[in-house]
Image 1 (cartoon, rainbow, N blue to C red):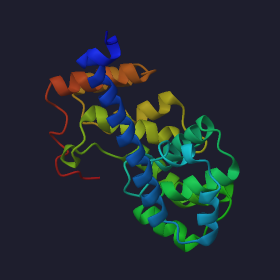
Image 2: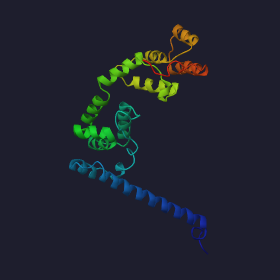
Image 3: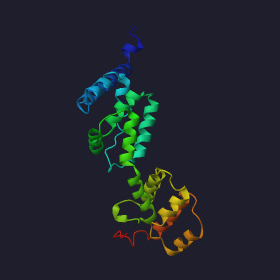
Image 4: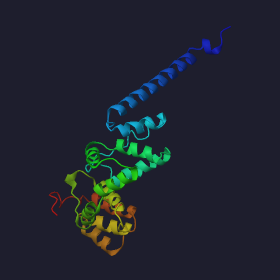
Length: 232
């Protein structure tokens, strides 16, 4: 009598499906390694480092973490935080962090590093933050916090605008308090006089309260009416 494994077509189908999935995974592994070898590995020392990194660390963790330069939507400090979180999760040593940091930069950021030259991870990280988030960039943001205006034609909703610059302000060296950041940003908006008077009469203490002001302003169809030309 035939066993269940040999007679049940469902079991056979599952087995075949599993084999196909395993084959696809290994093809992906091979293609990923080939791609890494073909891109960004011109330096012989970097190629040597790559060959010494265990296979399981070469493929997945940093594949979707890239920083392309000033126009990247990710903040440079957020990029470093994400990179170091993954490096910690994967237990990378300094040599491996150096390799994957180089591979995580693309476009303008990759060109910047090529011009600057490679180094130890901590050295490259310090130079990266000095270039992309140094005193000049931070002073520009501080000035914008105090004097900026919300411009609807830039394509950001009021809430997304608020979140974007609130998060960026928290990355400043010696950042303002949460209440101060909220105070600055709420004055970027063209608020209805009654809402403005309420804002002046009490301190908004957290993000939730700030968003309530913006939601009420949007409901009154006030936001953006006077700032379509983005005059500063």
